[in-house]
Image (cartoon, rainbow, N blue to C red; front, side, top):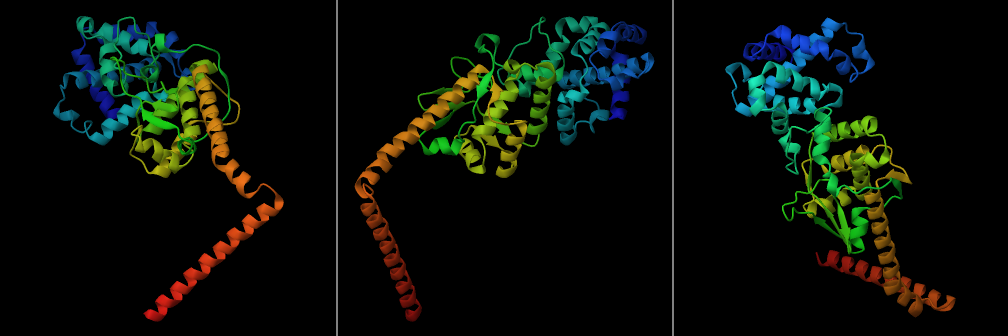
Length: 367
């Protein structure tokens, strides 16, 4: 990868409208702010090495994003355009450990290409690069503020502020699985776009025995993608009422405990699963982190969990009264009647077994 970075640094400096020393000076002036975004291991780099690292990484990102927008690829880019490498780089761009502060990449872009940045701001290139994750088709604006690419991808998942339910986090008991809920009559439904609203993946809706969940895909990149968003929330959104992604995967892990649960959601076209059922189920459960009773979750999911638990309890009680109570009243109203019922059932079972054995014997003799 370093070979590509050096090649792209060369093309970056050749295209730049400002001298390299001006770009380096820009990085140096922001060095203290940039260092604050890194772990202690970076702090040991001296100033020159730190500036070189930022310049090399930022120029590669800028050139790659620009080529992706303009499709101005050269013969030298042929290797980097291999599908497997493109997919790997796209995942590398959202790894939390790889992040450069967005502001420094944008600053370098604006300094290097002042005329270009007016009509093609770097935020536009970034939105285009990560458009696959932009399921709500969010629009950028000059005032859009993001920490880095991982933060942008998280923002793409978040409901808009006007649809984001406010409230303190609350304790939520574990809920029944999808298969258990279906057995008692709950319906799962894919939540479709409506009234020009593209729902966030996090916007589940429960009403009148129907749980609507926006469609999502599980593939071999899902775990990396999800783990980085969960890690981002852990360090940058530590308050429980802000950990929307973490809460989402916790709720999914309650609903999907077995392959049977996974099959329910696949059948209803809520999950587009490209993995083995066992692998997919295990992955969902691992993504929830430390799942335990009385977990903290945002108020919206807390209320939904309460409603689902109430649905299950009410239906279970109804099933008991509709089916079991008449049986108890008819066949087990006193110990003698209960013993007679059990004895009769055993006699019937033995009779059926004897009949089956006799039929098997006759079939063998006939052969």
